[in-house]
Amino acid sequence: MYRQILVARVLWRESPSDPLRVLQLNTVTYGTASAPFRASRCLMKLAEDEAAETPSAARVLQEDFYMDDALSGADTIDDAVDIQQQLQKLRSKEECREKQMSIPEYGANEAIKLLGLLWDPRNDIFFITNPFRQQATNDNVTKRSIFSEISKLFDPIGIIAPVIVTAKLLVQQLWKAKLEWDESVNIECLHQWKELKTELPLLTHINVPRCVTFDNVVSFSLHGFADASSVAYGAYIYLRNEFADGSAKLRLLSSKSKVAPLHELSIPRKELCAALLLTRLLQRVIPALQMEMREIVLWSGSTIVLAWMRKPLDQLQQFVRNRIAEIRKFTAECQWNYIRSQSNPADIVTRGQLPEALSQNYLWWNGPKFLEGPDYPVDEIAHVPDQLLPELTVVVATSTLNIEPLSFLHKHNNFRKLQRIMSYIIRFVDNCRQKNPLDRRKSNHHTVIELRRSTDAIFKILQHIHLSDEIQRVLSNQPCKRIGNLRPVYNEGLLRVGGRLDHSTLPFASKHQIILPDKDPITKAFIRTMHDELPCRPNRTYQCHSAAILANPQLYSLLPNKSDRYYTAYGEPAKITCSSVPTICSNWCRICRSILDKGRSTTSEIN
Image 1 (tube, rainbow, N blue to C red):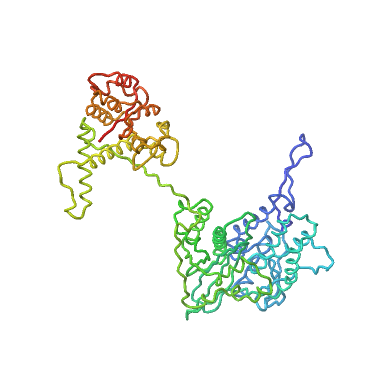
Image 2 (cartoon, one colour):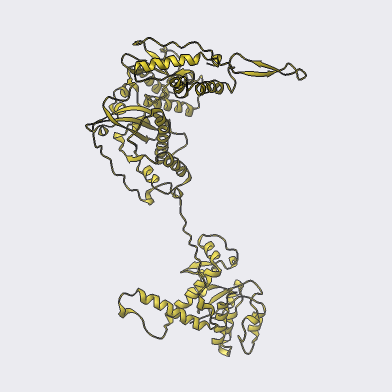
């Protein structure tokens, strides 16, 4: 083909000092990177320029050329002759100087070789030639000799895909054995090769009808199948001819197979690769057919793959997500169904089959029998629960709680009043949840449990307002920035001080004090309340100072009354001063003065 194209020009000079000369080659040069493009581009340009004068030939040039071979057809002999004459007219154009194409006379009975197949015009069937030489029994079987024979198998549309898979698996084993090219193969590979080589001549017994349609067909549909095994995966497409009485006949169109990679892939992943292979094969078959399809139905033998297709992409891991996205993109209008392995013709591809068995395999050549009926059954896709579905992303639910400060919280300076207001709110919520009116609490007095619940609720609100980032870090096991030295823990909705006291015999509230923000007015109101209720008397001196203890965790051991419940106020050094806690102690005892002068955060006991 390259020797027929008159388009190549070259800039040339003998030395840098010579002027440039423009030379034109008579043909496209073999071996140059642009040669295939130039040859094909010439044909495309010729088709574009002459489309108005020779439309049929232009269509053949654009759609039915493979390298330098034209493979086309027509519904009638007159149309075929017209295409032949138009092609001859195009070939005579000045862009090409190829020899005039000659076509056998009508009714020629000689077999014609077409892309690795032979076409018998009399019976209108394809059959496969025998390109294999008879090897002497004393010849040394090496990797080179096996590869040389296997490379002669050429099956562009996948008619003998199971045989090709068998040969591919043998090639993969030879590569895994890491043999030299002229090194004798091992016993296992030699046995497999002899078995395959003995049956390869039987490929000539396989014949396939060229025409995939029938007379009196009312509609067409495409059915594609995908399956995978531990060693290979494949896809297969049939054309379903549907008749007026509801019956149907299937004809093989194309198949594609791939050997599983050497690195280990799970069976669900291989099944997914098979579904993707079917999708890509379908993208090539539909434009080539140029037929109107009533429906396109795709079948997979994996319930896991079908479950992945129904999942949101953000819930799938990257390997699965990328392939499911491509499958959804190109099969959005197709219907995916489940099929069992015994009825799936693609299962034959995944396991490989020798020529003699393949020639007699009804399922391979005619498709599943249940599709020949008017209303074929469809198995219900089994539901796969998420806990059994692999390749799902681990979703970490981190709730970001944005709490707006309640209006009443900062309207009162008295912490006890805030405590009672919050207690009424919690009681109201509890009463609303009680279906029986007799179980609702209506007393004007607050119990100790209610007051403690209201206090915890106030502290939870404060923590989510000021320490929400620290809470998220603790929940996700990340180091805290502001209160890392306190080793915080999250328990029952409250952020508490951690540390080595966890192994002591102290009460839980004494070992893990609640952490409060130092800058909030409610914290300061709490400190003032604790000092007012715990005056400095001789027998309660240290209880006064428990409300103004330093934020330094090393000073927690100074608290003598460790059986009480303490709250730790968090703040940077020198943030809380004496002026922030006025009239804490009327006598300004030595301990209060020394603690407040250092400007640290506080802990206290409550009822």
